[in-house]
Image 1 (cartoon, rainbow, N blue to C red):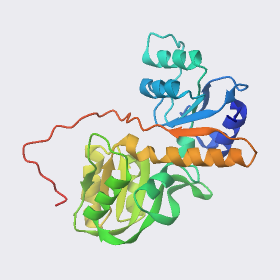
Image 2 (cartoon, helix red, strand yellow):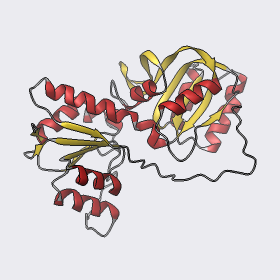
Image 3 (cartoon, one colour):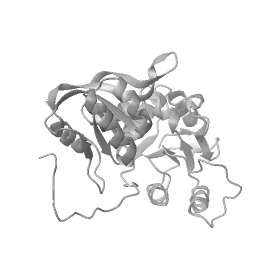
Image 4 (cartoon, rainbow, N blue to C red):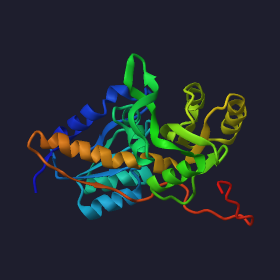
Length: 287
């Protein structure tokens, strides 16, 4: 099986997801691994958690590319007395490197929100919801169009089919019969962009981790100006579509240099929520 060095693979990843674009509070790049080691198999996953490490060990991966950082804040110990320490120990014992692309992948072109937009049926050209200063291609979120206008309930069902299943359903705020076409999306927690979505005059804003008070106040304010409906999906589900795009781009870039790696997208559902309890009413407000 062909392969490449970790140094070459991480250089390609950083050319795709420039670490200089990461937020100042973020922790991206190589977490552990010898740059000289040979990489033949790369596992892509949202979260660098124990179940993903188990999969990497079982498959024989040499590198995990994760979206979320293992250590977002500094630490003085990687002892195996915590789950993060145990992750580090297992990675090193099994010669598995770990690389993170987080907020730099969020704003990349293409990045996390592009993949989310494609997954829920949007067509291009996509544009950032909140562009980086002086850059109209990169930035947070994406705005795109549906091929045709459709009721909000139909788009919500389309989005649900396009995203990987998790324990909970998509939550929708707005008139189910409202006709929509222009859609804004943001992979991961996007309630900081609620005002931006309102100003963009889109029909729907789809993101994750919407909290009660910001969402409630947004819908009250938006009602006066016919603002966008909201769709709240699972955090993990909105970022998972990026993995396949990142894997494809990496193999393509390495291929132009005459090297190959085998990639795999983890389908381990690492969303924090694992079950739902159905209420007695059984209401389905989209119907």
